[in-house]
Amino acid sequence: MVHIDSELVRLLMRIGYAAAWQGLHKEAVAIFDGVGAVRPESEVPVIGAAVVAMLSGHEDVAVQTLREGALELNPGSAQARAHLGVALRLRGDEDEGTSLLREVASQTADPDAAAMARNVLALSTEQLSRNSKSIL
Image 1 (spheres, rainbow, N blue to C red):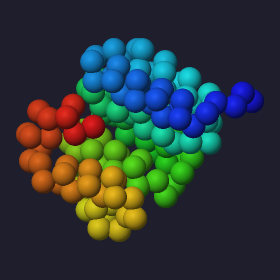
Image 2 (cartoon, rainbow, N blue to C red):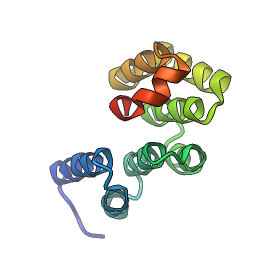
Image 3 (cartoon, rainbow, N blue to C red):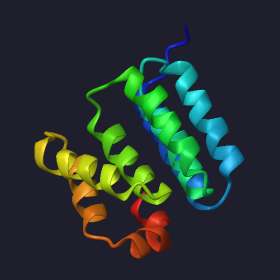
């Protein structure tokens, strides 16, 4: 396996998210797949791919990717669980998504995941779908 510096991996993830937010979904997925190739034990690039699915309106794919990918790799990942809560709410599973986000907001030691969960909980369903790009 090729060793890639952690700082380079973080930079690639930022570039992947920038591509996703600019609508370059295919390019973003390619970047996240590359990061996944050098960090196969990490759920982080899988979360990136799920964000692309959400941004492109494929909430079912995002839910499946998070459940079968990110959470399989790291069942305790607060980031994966927070993103799953968003994907569930975007998909229309309001009760399940809200419950998961409340759990993350109140029980996680990850301040970024907790803040994301609280911010998403503060949004109505309409606000969430209209503002999903700025939340993710």
